[in-house]
Amino acid sequence: MKIDGIAIAGFRSFGDQLVEINDLQKINVFIGKNNSGKSNILRFIKHVSEMKIQEPYKGFNQELDYSVDSKTKDIQFGFQIKKGPSATSHLYDQVSSQFTKWDDHFPEWKKSFWFVYSTRHLNRTVEGQPFAKTLGDHIFKACPPDETNRITGKLCGYTQGSPEKRAQDIAVKLLQMTQIPFTAYLIDAFRQITHGEDDAGLSGRGLIKKLRSLQSPDLNNYQASKLKFSKINEFVQELLGEPDAFLEIPAEQDDIYVSIKDKILPLHSLGTGIHELIILAASVTVYDNVVFCIEEPEIHLHPGLQKKFIKYIKDKTNNQYFITTHSNSFFDLEDVNIYHCRLIGRHTKCNLVTTHLQKSSILSDLGFKASDILQSNYVVWVEGPSDRTYLNHWIKSKNPSLIEGLHYSIMFYGGRLLSHLAFNDPEVSEFIQLCKLNRNACIMIDSDKKTAHTWLNDTKKRIIKDFNTNGAFAWVTNGRTIENYIPEKIFNDAIEVVHPKTKKFFKWDRFNDLTKLRKDKTIDKVGIAKKVSLCPADFSMLDLEKQISDLVQKIENANK
Image (cartoon, rainbow, N blue to C red; front, top):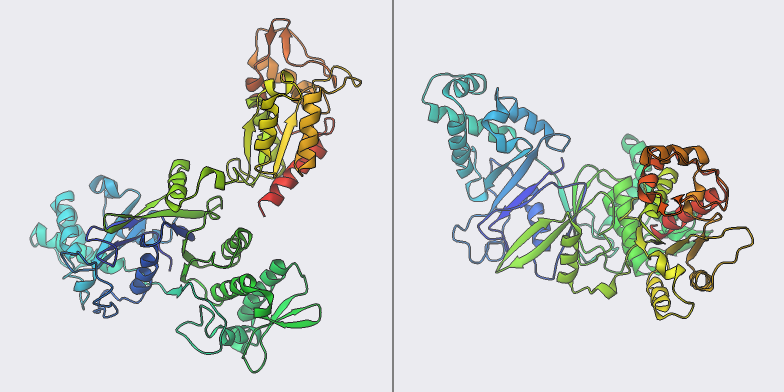
């Protein structure tokens, strides 16, 4: 089973006040300074996975695991139970269905609620849990007597009794029905392939034997094991860029070999980063529907390999992941939750990151400067907002998975730069230097040509040359402006909506000026672009098909 949210109190760097780590996804990344408590979260999840609500837990180290300034000396944990779709929606439904007016009785629980357990009070029954009384008191205050009477008749087999006792008995039953058993494995920061055993065959130790069982499975697990081994080999092939590469475990089970073009090489000969990444990928593939806690996967892995690993676990496995890191490579990945861990006073606080400002705070916390970060995976420079609207429309039509602000950014350079500045103006030089910060870049320039024989001005020629020389992409419109890529009917339909009083009909031509309503008035470019973008994209005009296809390909390549 997977977890929607977990709360921690009294464990190591966590104080007596519960810290809620909420709204967990499949992949959850915890970022923060050294000694901010990131690893303590992973250790705690591993502990909780080994607990049983009705049995005492003896797995804590009395000297290390209890918060040093705890007044209660009680380690507590809690689970978030969420309304669907979620991992715990069945539990939410099971609890809420006991009440006839759930939303009225518990409006603060419309989306989720938390149940909390004390490890000091783990025993044969849940009646001794402090939260049982807290929950019972809440039910007593929220529900009328006839409601609790009905529920105890259904859950406890009796009616009547005092309303207080009925509420307490209901609380105990609810705690009993919302236990969340899950299996967790910890992959620590030291990973090395060795022969032998460990608790799960992970972190490299003992992994050889498990891979051997996937390579040569017994009959009962033949298909499932072969499929897992095939997934690992597909990852190895992609990683090495060798379609025929595959892993091989010898009969002696003393090493892992990689076969590449009829050559057999020991895994460690491929370099530490590849070695480590294959260990990680293999480890998370041998188990299904479990929780993996992974410490610092960026060790020995450059950002490209880090992203390949995240893509693999996202697409090829069905586990849930808790990952600690100091790397900013996880920031722009889809479907990955980022949590910022900080030590405030002597205690760890952990917050879900949802805004760019919060991401900036993490980067500052880790010591990154603005100059350390190259803007975006891909940057498209355009003259103004209407160009941005058209480009987003066309890019989305070619590849709906590409998202502005995640896979690419659109920046404005302003028409003055290309229309009014001289070839050797300092501002032109500064702009070119700025663009060199990220060579995964495109600049889109209106040709402004009135005829096929009109020359581009020297400033545009200089910027085009410098972009192309530095491996970037310079796109000069094949017509006069970007508006000349719009079919005549679609453009005039948009004009009629945005400028209903005009009687002008724009006749399309490659070099016609489609921006003037009359001599002293221009069209509402942004309004027209928004209306045009409501229509299906038409790539038949001029060289639009080629240019937008090239741009999309470059954005895709920059995000691999």
